[in-house]
Image 1 (cartoon, rainbow, N blue to C red):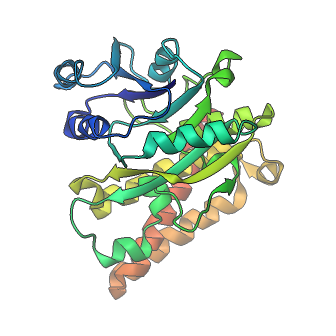
Image 2 (image 1 turned 30 degrees about the vertical axis):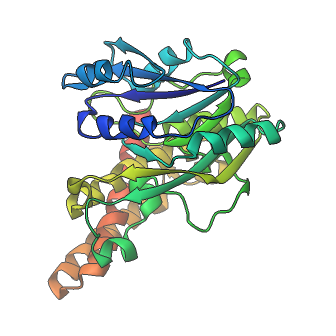
Length: 304
């Protein structure tokens, strides 16, 4: 038996499509349970969950305090079986998704956590500039198509498609409730913080290319301004990851490596120049880098 766990907040735009795909899944050996935590949604999420109660092995609960990691930790209390597969409310799993996770768990008892493939489900054919210029991993949490099944660093195990042996949670490990999606602005990478932390405790990480989900990308998420704003959050997440790195503790000004202030100014000037000259590709990169450095700096200031 395995448990699929996901948290949702106002996910009505994608949740129903995702749950419909669960109905079509091939049954993994030993079966599975699905736990959905409604994280104080104000839309039609509760209604959608009730509609699927008799269609899926679904157990759902609601918590009123917002925070994705808090919701996941609440859901962990209901886990049954030896394996927890974590995902999101905006994914479309392939039919053999859980079968692949189950088979891998049975054949590789020494591996404690692993991530599967995350590929895009575009709302329409994306513009060429998105495919050529946008860092798809940072913006849409899409895994590198060049990755093959095998050992990987724990920071490449991502929350939309990851599996963790239940014994890890039974040993007391939990998600950090002070980071991740909550009301207002948040730092990206909450699941990565967890995977890196348990890796330090000795747990092994892997990549399972054959377990595939599609990430639903909404029309507003291919807008240039939305994409650039993701760079700000990405910068914040990088600060959270790098703040313990010795190389980032040298020549600091207000908790920030001195060179980053210069990089921010340089990117801002580049953006102005490329706007004047009409080089849109170069301007996008400058704007992305500017927001990335800004997010890093602001995060560092707030932590002081």
